[in-house]
Amino acid sequence: MAAAYTPAVSGSGLKAGVQRLGGHLAGMVMPNIGAFIAWGLVTALFIPTGWLPNKHFGELVDPTITYLLPILIGYTGGRMVHGQRGAVVGAVATMGVVVGSKIPMFLGAMIVGPFAAYLLKKVDGYIQERTRTGFEMLVDNFTAGIVGGAVAVFGVWGVGPIVRQVTKGAGNGVEWLIHHHLLPLASVLIEPAKVLFLNNAVNHGVLAPLGFAEAAKDGRSILFMLESNPGPGLGVLLAYLLFGPRSLRPSVPAAIIIHFLGGIHEIYFPYILMKPRLILAAIAGGAAGIATFMATDAGLVAAPSPGSIFAYVAETPKHGWIGVYLGILIAAAVSFAVGAALLGFGRFAEKKPDETTAEAPGGTSEAAAEDPAGAAGAPAARETASPSPQEA
Amino acid sequence: MDGKDIRKIVVACDAGMGSSVMLASSLRKELRKAGVTVEHTPVNSIPGDADIVVCHAGLGARARNSAPDKPVITFQVFLGDPAVARLVKAVKDGGEIGA
Image (cartoon, rainbow over all chains, first blue to last red; front, side, top):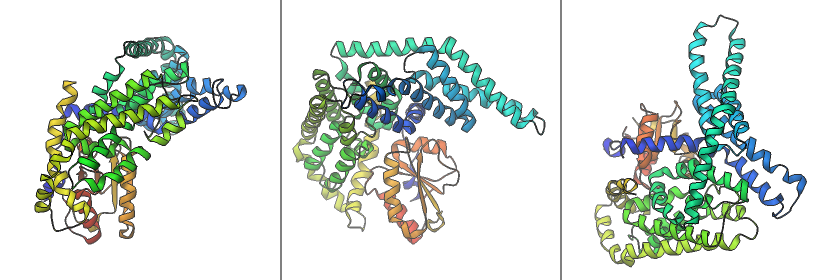
């Protein structure tokens, strides 16, 4: 019984490792999403092409994205490594790469923030044992000041210019993909990564920082919508609702609300993990959505987080409605159609309930009825699903 | 470990901001009368005073790495998962929980 609760560690060490690295990247961005949204809203409202153009308020836009947002990321990255002291040197160090590069420096902040904090942690470990009683405050303040200042100078001199090239290179790569109409292929990587719980890593660790750099330049970015489009997940859930195993159908409407309105995409991952072939539906939907966004030149002003339809509404730029909604709609329609076909339009649904009722433990609730399907389907699902990112 | 000994349940997800908040709030509602604290955190920073950790199977390896001494309960689906239902029952009525 006990073993059933905690099965052996699932997934390979590599998967957990990638998740952990991605988790660190996303962990620096996600606690600060509120600030990003504030910037997005101010930008959408007050820039010359916004809803309420206002030069005076518009002055908020540049300093916020150049200084405040990267520094918040560096601060949070430092705090993850070495608490409040790490946060302070992380922020100071980030100032170095910001000044050294003159473009929105999210990637640089993600590197030097934790690095400065790590350095201070090592310095603290060495010095604290050797500090005389009564000198702790003096020593603590000056080690933090010296480490922060040194990393900031190093950032201006060395890291800033390098990371500027890297950010430019990544931006050029994305532009190249857009120019050659290859961006929809990104779904082949993004959708499988999502359901393996790399969603935050992909979106907040990679796409959003590039997107903010683009949005600072053009006022909007398509990159915010590659991962966060709620359309593909909605299509998969609708396919489940109509054609999925009967025992699972009752749980789907609630999942649709949580996914599409609440923006918690994690809710639909298990439905794909149970029937891994449905990842093809998500990929097809995602690619169709991105193609639509590209064709209509759509973009959002900031990262919609969580990926809810309401966040999309709030962050769609003026005159950008059609492309954004069409992309969501088409993504949902395509992933629903493919998903329905993969589920055999319900033809495979008939066998399951018999097994389910036969195996179901005493309980008669909906939850109990789902159990065997979930428990039996998912481990197998995981094994077949895990290789897919490597193939892709 | 007996369900009655649980004082604090930690629900973990990748960022500690999305799915864990959702599951924690529904657990909190179910366990309102049991006198159990339910918290949500990122899977990389599970607090030391947690009695038991709940997270999705896809994050199980990371939860065990980040809190090696805690019992970890993994689930497959976010709504009505049997493992979570068993935990709730064990906390309410007492009874053995696998560790």
